[in-house]
Image 1 (cartoon, helix red, strand yellow):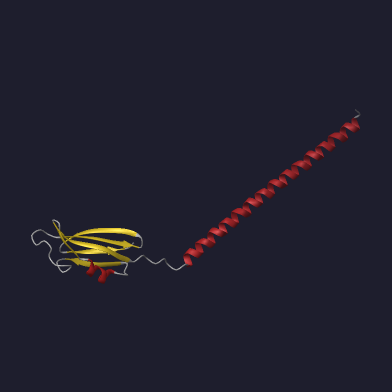
Image 2 (cartoon, helix red, strand yellow; image 1 turned 90 degrees about the vertical axis):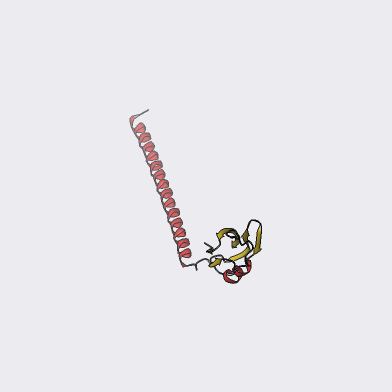
Length: 140
């Protein structure tokens, strides 16, 4: 092979390699740009979601819904739910004194106890309170 032809083939090969390298570099830059654009879009979407949540009205707390109040001791009990229904229905928190005014004195000798069952939305709650203390019900 003559020297000028060899030189021409080498220059052609270099041009092809250079062209391929430039093309690959360009494709790499395009991929980087696409990745940066996708990242920017995701950040924008997250910012928009955060703004929606910040501007949204606060979620309403669930309200108290009374299930039962069993007041007494040693198997002698009465149903003390009515005062709780009157004082707590539709509220997110309330306080009721546990004493014989709930439904009388079912067992005069020992200290009576109230087992109070209520719901906050769908979540069941139970509180046990001794006589003479305020029962505090609340929905978080």
